[in-house]
Structure formats: C-alpha cells, structure tokens
Image (cartoon, rainbow, N blue to C red; front, side, top):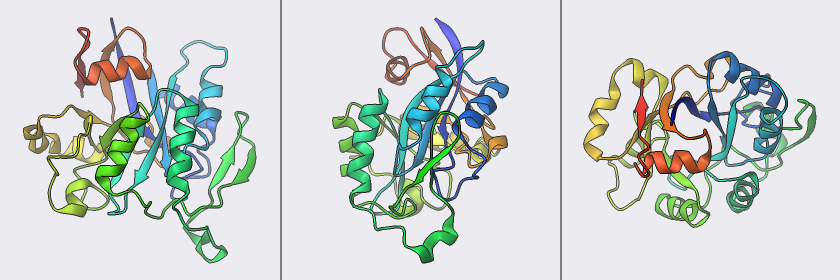
Length: 248
C-alpha cells in the first residue's frame, strides 16, 4: 500500500465556465507539477474530454498522473454531483444520457464561454452543441441511482458552498440519497468547514473544482492504495480491503 495524492474534481476547456487554457496536455502537466498522483476529469454534464486527458496521462515519461473519467452532473434541482466511473466508455455512455436532456447551446448563450472538445495534442476538434451549464432532467435521487447503476461513485460536490450544493439548493441533506462521499472545496478546507459535515457519517474528501490551471491541486485528498485507480479509490471510500483514506 502506498499513499497517493488526489484531486478528484478537475475541469477542462470543455466546461463553459473554465479557462480555455485547460487543454488535456496542460491539465496533465499542471497535475504533475502540483505533485498529484491521481485526478478526476469532471466537466459539467459531459465526459467529452476525459478520454483525451487519459490518453495524455498514459503517455511515456516519469511521474505520470492517473486519470479517472467523470462528470459533474447538474441535477434538475441544480445540485452538483461529482460522478466518477471505472472507464471512459462507461463515462461517455452516462454522459450521453445526461446530455440528451439539455437544451441546445444557442448563439446568444455563447457569452457563457466556449465548450471546446479537444484531442490528446490539445487541438480543438469541435464544440459541444448542448448547453452544459443547464440543469439536466435527472432529479437528485435519480441521478445518484443512475451513477450507481453505471458502476460509478456519486459524490456530493462542494457541500460547503451556498449555491449548487446539496444543502444550498435543498436546504437540507437528504438521508435517503446514497452518496459515496462528500466533497469540501478549497475554500472550505481553509475555513475548516469539514467539521460540520462529519456528523453525516460519510467519507469526506477535499477537491479543487479547478477552473484554471493554477487551481489544480489547490486542495487534495490522500488515499492509501495499491494503485491510483478507480477500483482502488472505490475500495478506499468503502474502507474495504484494509485501504484507508485521509484528507489534508
């Protein structure tokens, strides 16, 4: 078992609110420079750039970072859920179901930011035609259940924030929604906000929700794993097989 540093909420230039400089090669390099061993690519309502980032990360070189494909789902209530998946094919299939319910990205909405689909070289290969900043048709409970049916992990995103969080949107934390973990933001980490969420009895992680290169690894979690991958992470969060997780 080895201790790995992870940032499980990283955006790319595909998210309309993210910097266009978040190309797949730049994201991997920034993660390596930050000393991370594992990242999760979680663009809003899509996994369109996850395979390209994984392609870069799997390339030759020392100290490469491992990549988990994911989605930051915006539920019908506008709650953000970080969904992590075992492979890019599963993530793409889950994303297709989310994208199906989104409106088209009309020309007038382009002020929200570009939605850049990229390859492993960082070249633009297209733009997503659905409005990724919109709420999906999945209510919260159905979104989490769907992630689990796909074999994924569902994490309540940045629960310490007043907007787009479970408590911020609903006013309470629903006991009947089976999250695998709770995410605290970088600001929440600095403010010690994690203490108030420990009473929920769920694993707590810190993640950057990075929308620019300099935010990647701004906060992180540490996991004791045999290897930095989805299955090891899932066992760690379930405290199975002797694996434990730590946050700092």
